[in-house]
Length: 518
Ligand code: HEM
Image (cartoon, rainbow, N blue to C red; front, side, top):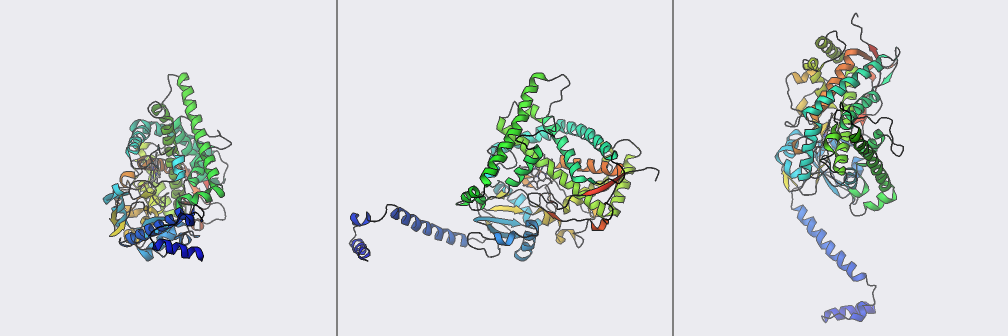
């Protein structure tokens, strides 16, 4: 009481008695000043953001924001789609302290991916993506800058260019023949796990083209490349420090997330270093018939970190996405025998009685192309495009989007929107593409499995030809049934997962060799 009175007296008199100040611990004054200025700043910020027309969204709780409304059983893609029906196709949510704009209509996707692409085309920063992309030396996670542009050019010319595509097709043919032989060797009525065999096929092909070997069976710290890539996908998702930038790192430390991330990085780095070391060694021992792979051709012009980052993008970008698409295509075909029969008739008619399916046969298969489009419409492997972040203020749908806001565009929702796809939007009906010709490479925005704008997927042509080639082979040589006791119409089609929407149960089917005499 006495002290308070003294301070008031002194302040009134316009001078502060140093004896009284020294009575308090030394941290009190700076802390009080900090709190005072922070409150003023927060108040000013609140007033500032209230002067913007922000997109609507559900009320949020202190600290966690809208997290409790999103982490439900039905999957984030479905929950956000449901919320967009209440609040509209531009929806503002807060995950912890981070504001997220969720886009759920073709019109607004056009504004994000085309009209304001330049202002919304950087990727959000996170500790995990920074570490696993070797300090943003890659294409997919890198911020929008000159380095990203240069690396994207290297990827497009060296991995997706004509020379490598020729190699890719040769390797694919060889691996496909091996796969057909392996399935044919199964005894009658044996069930196969299609996801397993397709994933191994894609790993083998991509591995051989990218770094000359599938590296199947090799491990680093006891982990295969597949284990490491899967772990990297999990770690690339959100962490506490991403949604709570000020204190989340404590939770990441306490939950062991930081240690797990570091181990994932160490294993990824170690495995990729093993691949690069093998190439350095081979440089001295190359024979005259050696065909250069992607690493051979890029190693001398990229730094070690850039090389590792690009290989990481190829593994994470190409393998799971293509596999998931093929597994969903086979699921839908088995569940819809009419479509399966029509497609098999087309494939067998175009190929004729031969020992293999040629690329020139596939160019004649128009129904196959519709089936692949229909699969990507209903089951885009990435339910949301890769995250984007606003770098410069703009308006989407008449609402203000502020720098720092993260943007999520739902590819899954657009593919199922009845306003675009009419009343049979949820049905697997490839014939719809007889009249509608969407450009799924990301120029039109009715369906966007490969995204759009500057950050659109550069691998869309390679991906679609991989899917077309694999499906046409699987359906040319075999007929596919559900295992005994499971009716086709009862096949489980539940989907879940992040960043990729997979089947929740494995797709196990029984192949029988096609008999031309039947
Ligand atoms: C069915 C297969 C595939 C699907 C559905 C798919 C889908 C996507 C999507 C949705 C994006 C984000 C686009 C955006 O933010 O607007 C993306 C980006 C990317 N994809 Fe694919 N992808 C597939 C295959 C491939 C293949 C074969 C490669 C080959 C290397 C690849 C490499 C990449 C890269 C590097 C990016 C980042 C582009 C950037 O940020 O500039 N993808 N992909």
